[in-house]
Image 1: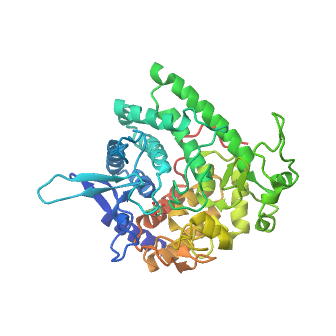
Image 2 (image 1 turned 180 degrees about the vertical axis):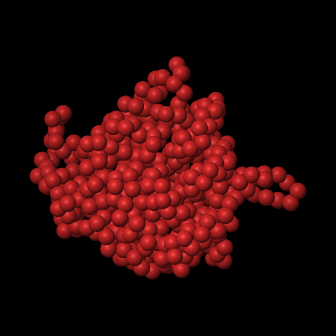
Image 3 (image 1 turned 180 degrees about the horizontal axis):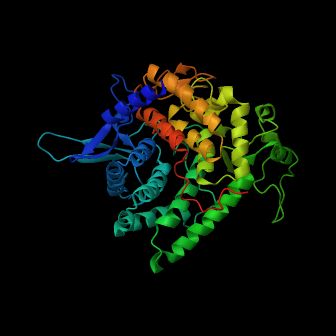
Length: 459
Ligand code: GLC
């Protein structure tokens, strides 16, 4: 069963490869369905290609990854969105398409969020690009590529966008709603965990990628300081377990001055009712979002798992996260791994925060749906911290369902039991996540962890 599922995933991945001027440069998001949910599923999405890229690196097929990095690099910042308004050159597209007309050279058409339905800037793309560049260099030893003047310059531009002075008081990054995997409104504006984890991963990768010369010295120092500040802040203030919940309940509010305990002025009354029942004795997680006067208590899988992979979580926090998964296995893994977030927005919250988005009703799509594409991050994080059994169990569930259901994009329902109502079939990152998970289990090596310092992640 497992082997044939992986074989079938490879066959799909092979059919999905996109070529540009004769070279493989990425994979489309979904294939072969008459009614793709939107036309841009024929684009190559930056975030969707990441698990495929890691598969290719593991298989020694690094060319496609290098070509992808090159192409995305070349189209960054392209095309002013409005007359007289130029895009920052560090901004990378959510996706791109290769246009081919008879007798003409292939042309690349990027989408920076103006074309896709959600109409939001993909803040995660530039971060995935840096992180993948780090993985490519580690896998191939091709430091020459990363040291190219234009690539170094792009890393600097990306960092300037993220670490330059802003209006912010805290070390986290402020972004609009839906600027990452959840790319439509879902009340995920502000300081969503997934972006903070990716930001952290980017800073770790950049420290190693920037040439250690006089030009970069100051920038590397800034990057290291910001990384440390971000790490301390997320570990302390995003973390929720019984002890921190009790502390929040006892918070004094409206404190003035530097000695304040409740530094974000969170009102205990804002703790939703479900939290007390849901949070086990053993276990904890990083909350979904945190900013002045606002803690979003929802649980978001990818941000938590990336925090483990990148070493943003301490070892103890990582273990507690997997205790939470064990405690809530039916809800968070269910029939088809794994839930994107929990619990979903319902009623008035759904109306106000999604703007009545019909694709995001409770227990579907981004709003509590289950996404096979997340499996690799779960497998990687579990293997990294010695919780292999959880990864194996989730993998078996996925292998059983995904082929039979033709690689759906997402599943609906409390337990993720039904193929998503508006899900594409033959969704490529559902297939590449399964292959990558298999590779992780076979080698017992988690991806994207090597950019950490040996002491990161402790205590
Ligand atoms: C949806 C997802 C997004 C993904 C895209 C292509 O818009 O929300 O994360 O990149 O589909 O698969």
